[in-house]
Length: 530
Image 1 (cartoon, rainbow, N blue to C red):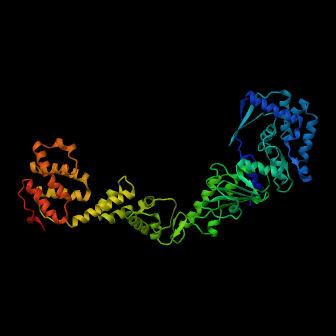
Image 2: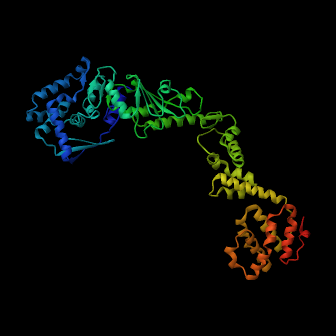
Image 3: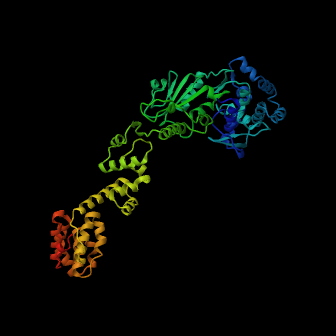
């Protein structure tokens, strides 16, 4: 419950009633002709009717609250043509002193120098005349502004527990009851550009029926019950302001002793579809919102983030996708529609994560990325069965899904190698050819390019090296490193190398033997087979 002292602190902080502008230190500047003309016109109107600075009174209680100030203005009206007396009164600290100082502008018909007070929404200009309070001078000299005019009567209203409403056309004191006039309500709704009908104000994405019953949407929304006006207000997250909040922008045009009694604030929205529990319905950060420290969007987001945090921190592990909860991780993973490799990764990562996961509008890869740092290396190591290789893969710049595909390619190639013949102590030339063929099957063309440089000395070794580069279509960039004889021999051996790279495991012996034989090497590999 926000009592008078809290409300007064808010007023002091913002200078308005509960929202709007904070007035900073004033500076003096030369007035432009247009601004000076406006200032003189305001002073002229005040000369005609100095009571413009006071609201209309709806009852005797209102009149009584302003009795002292009204008498001061009555006296002032009688001497409004006596500049000496006006000068004397302007040196006091009352609202009447601000009026007296402004009437001097009327008589002088000039205001060449103005004070500029910075506020959160811009700058307010006023003429410093006498010793009247700055807020009173601003209110008097901007008596046609629905916000600034309230600065002059704020203290009186709060001291007497009165209710005042200010809008473009007028402002009124309703006495000791909260009763916003219909014209004021219409003014507020236009300010917020809300659809207003049958005491329900909503943004375009909400319906009156659902707001009236506080029904859940697919997206959260701000729900406000303005009790004294008997109005329900709904603003969805998409329409919610990033910079301001509805309450502050509304109450800057009214003064009442207890804002939180008049306005009820809730965030309607659940983390899970179809769920309805007290934990999820609890609305937090209300005081921050009432004080203006949170915008509409920030209030919605902070509450939804808090509800999500509570769900994640609950003792039960939850898997939630697009607000739908899944009892088992397999069900959650299937709802993501991953490919086979991504599914295996998600099963492993979620099994090791052991915490709730709540996501919306995500791809399998994006979920993997969320969990990748925690156990990505361990998953890769399980695939390739090689710690160093897993660490190398983990450092690649590709996405986790692409890295996983590479890891499975390596695994598949290793599986193929298990079925290939095993040799022991092969001669250098035979070992070189066998090594390149196996590298190709395990790690692909790029690794072959690197290993082909490590050929045995002599024409045969270089010919086989060049032949492998030809077979993988990479010889063009390295042709200059080979002699004519080595190139011609490599071209001759190319078909035999292609056969070695593509043959089945059953014909690998024969393909390797043919390559060595046609290279001119007298090597019988059957002697080295285990």
